[in-house]
Length: 95
Image (cartoon, rainbow, N blue to C red):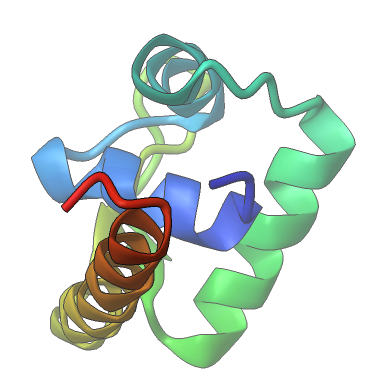
C-alpha cells in the first residue's frame, strides 16, 4: 500500500505526530518513504477533507491529529483493503 493519505491516517491513528515523525513512522511500518512534497501535499488534502487537523505548534513543529471523520474513513478503507487481500489470497491459493 503506497497511498500517502492512507499511510498518514494510519500513522496518526496511533498518536498525534508532526510531519517528520509521520515520515519516519510510515517508513518504519510500511517500507514506503514519502518525500516532503508528497507528505505535505497529502496533509493539505486530508485537512481540506476534515480527516486530520493541526493541534497547534510544538517546538517549531506542527503536530496533526486524526479527527473522528478521519478515523471512520481509515476504518472503511482498511475494511476494503482487507477484502482485497482476502480475495487475492484466495485466487493465489493461499487462503
